[in-house]
Length: 319
Ligand code: F6P
Ligand code: MN
Image 1 (cartoon, rainbow, N blue to C red):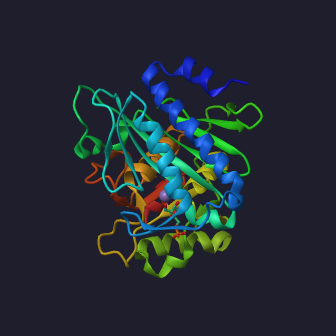
Image 2: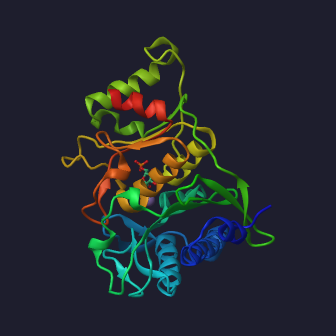
């Protein structure tokens, strides 16, 4: 079985991109090890701070963020980082070729119930010799050179793309290596499985309510087939399921939010997941546009997300 370093050597031309991906994934192995210790490591629970979105940070959010931040800032190929847990970008090396945005621990409310969480990352290439600014990060997702996540589940998996298909690696804990286990994964165009937080139903747009009502009507409704529903409450887990067995994932804007922005963050949630889903043959849209075409206005910007099986995303948008 091919190891991650062998795979990178064979498929990623830029040695600096290889370096950034290796530093990121090595750190994720350490995060995985910390998570495996659970309560024994005395690291669960709140850290007592709020992040820039006003959400309470869990201790492990802070720990994971610091681990990634320290490792990436020390990496000469990194120009700057942006993180869900940092208000501003953090500059690294003025000649670094890569800007990396990450969600250090997505779905962190799952930590206390020993359920799935993950690290999501997105990379852009940059040139020249100057200190990074936030403006440099504000490029549409279609310019990402690599994107992926590490899922901390029953096994730890790395899933990433450099624009040439999506590959999955499983962490072999005996060797301490990510090994290529699923090559060039594809998302089927049709599905009978959806993921949405139904508790927000009454706040959705009328169109979204009509679409989901028709799914729930199953064989007796206009869709003429029964649908199953799943919700991991960690985007990384829901997207992983879709890459493994298909489906549609939706986090729509709702009427509680006059800006219609939704919950998920463009730079380190929607964009990297959209790049993965598109590379696997699926689609990723807001209610009005392709996610990868959005011109970002801020590193912590939020967007509505509808992604997964191509025909199902089209159907949803047709409402
Ligand atoms: O990072 C935000 C997030 O935790 C996603 O991972 C997940 O999809 C979503 O929020 C869960 O939202 P809710 O709390 O509405 O289930
Ligand atoms: Mn998240």
